[in-house]
Image 1 (cartoon, rainbow, N blue to C red):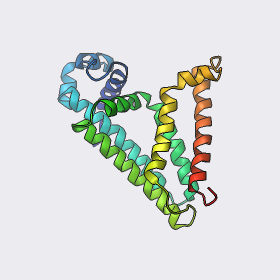
Image 2: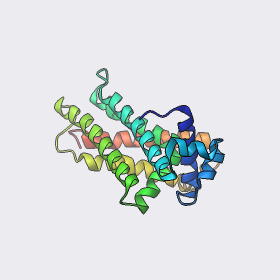
Image 3: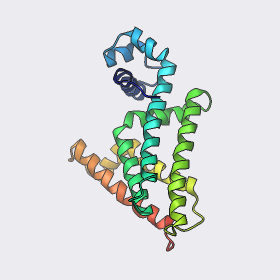
Image 4: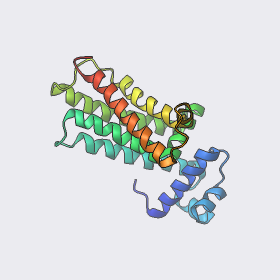
Length: 209
């Protein structure tokens, strides 16, 4: 589903509030005030706070799906380049959409049933399917070895990135990086994370590992 600019404005306001205060701790009035719209507009576009959250997951999930599809269908890239591009795209997306990532982590910990849980499961399944196609394409070309546990490989990418994102303040203190500005620190850890994951994934996919 395509959302118009006003709907996206409301979704992004809600996303930030859900990340900071939780779903239960955020009222529709809070969302309306943050988005700069009236209550009636939220009801008109989404019907309820629950439906607004569902729209948020649908909006973010569709965008990520399109990103992965564009990488998969790019005939000008080698298999290794596609995997490296996927890693960089994923890191950028996680850091750019930190509020959404926090909401997703919270929902996975608190709920295992209902519309949101179903959307999360569908999102994960879609991402894994597209990631699997990229890996299998490389295997058919002889670029990657057979017998790769693709679900575990994807969990390694997602888990490592998520852990760094949610504990970045500890990483900063442990490595004496307090003197860096927020922008400098983020640039540094994204670069280090990208290099680390590419080295790790290359070792897993290569014949030498």
